[in-house]
Image (cartoon, rainbow, N blue to C red):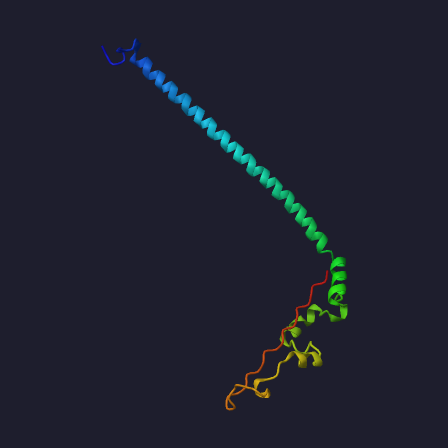
Length: 150
């Protein structure tokens, strides 16, 4: 008599062993389906959030397009800053761009250039620079880059 023919509580050992394997398989399938259902729920939640974010992106892009309208910006610049759009006389043609970059002060009117340069430390009354040290020359005032044509 072998182990497989032996009887346990009236059942053959192979029958009991196969029943335990069947119970383990049923439990494994149940757990796998439960975890898969939970994952499906999480995936659905994330997909809903992605759809909401896409809708919000579309809404924000529309709002940015509304806020960046040139007419609206020009009206706000005039109302709040006293500014106006750049006239064509202030634009530099592409051929003169290299010249303007090499001599930034030549493009600025003389009165504006004098106002932009701070006085040298030797010219002030309370200078802390020693008299035998040469005074450092101030850096030229930065000029705004020309805006591209729309």
